[in-house]
Length: 490
Image 1 (tube, rainbow, N blue to C red):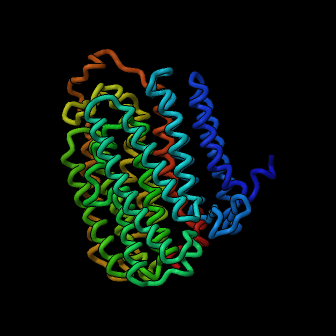
Image 2 (cartoon, helix red, strand yellow):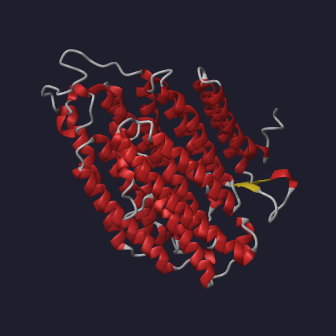
Image 3 (cartoon, rainbow, N blue to C red):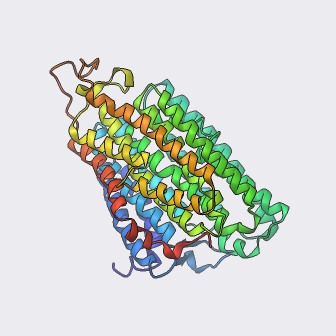
């Protein structure tokens, strides 16, 4: 068994285990959640083994012994290992939360576990595939399982949001597939390593890159392509919202990084990087302003996601600048992992508040509606990380971004980051102000003198992710040292 989990074989197990969990949870409906949980825990262990193994160099596995361009290759370096690791960590916390969220035996509960395992399979596939077409397959499985998870919320609004999400995802996949077709027509291979050596900076390569990036931007919900995200994330069940915001959006951003800085580097331009940076800055301001105007808690957190995604793209002009590329890459790493933990915690905490109060209307929420101090603590820590205050992981990410911006004189970018931090503080403290409102509650579920009990697993899982975001602020040096060898921008 040790040999099966050693070296490159880890890559196969990371995809196979979660897929087996999905199949088992469908076949054994009564105990499906336990098969799914076993797969999630196993995935967490495998992710730790992969992160340790990747420190000794990239791992490569050739399926069936057929080398590229005919065969399929799985590949993992420390960047992809990090993405799998944060996916496993957040996924384990969300799974723990989900045990107390869904009613055992309900239709939603029976559907959630196989769909979640299928989503996990797609995420791991995207992080490990070294072939452009297999990435397309992973994107399709990811989109379809994510859309199906959104529909677990009953009601017309959830269905409309899911359909809009589906149409956007299909359009994004079509753009990506057209780019893949152009590359295959030109080079008769879709292996990413071979394409990196063959592709130049011609019109075909730039057209292909433009189509693929456009499709992925739709799926990542970068402003102004974000219109589908707030209703989908706000209307989904709390654990689904956490998975979509913390993990699914990061997967498509990861692919953009790979294509831009690894595979089609010669076809990229500084103008294109600047355009992405400007769109990222617009997302920071627009998403933050919409979060300030939001009337519901989950809607506020969803618009916050639009703003936080903007920081990742605001880094592109710096990632394209050799003087600060390494520092900017460290910032991107920290934004991904800190946002995944903080945003996962916020959605889970918001789900607890919604259950306790019976609604998430900010105007009607009162201190008495908060389920416990644990949920409040999780919400506060996660919010502080999103603002970028020390000693959280969000502070490290923004500090690194500001350092790289100052070094190249990008004062406009530094200004946007600072304004974004102030706006984030405004909407986070708007939520925390509820804790000091002691006026009578308007909750239809918890009348005065009667509290709704929230499962302890739901409370502690939200706090665990929030504490992870806090711990990242103290562990910056060892965490960043793991990714020194990953500099895809070099």
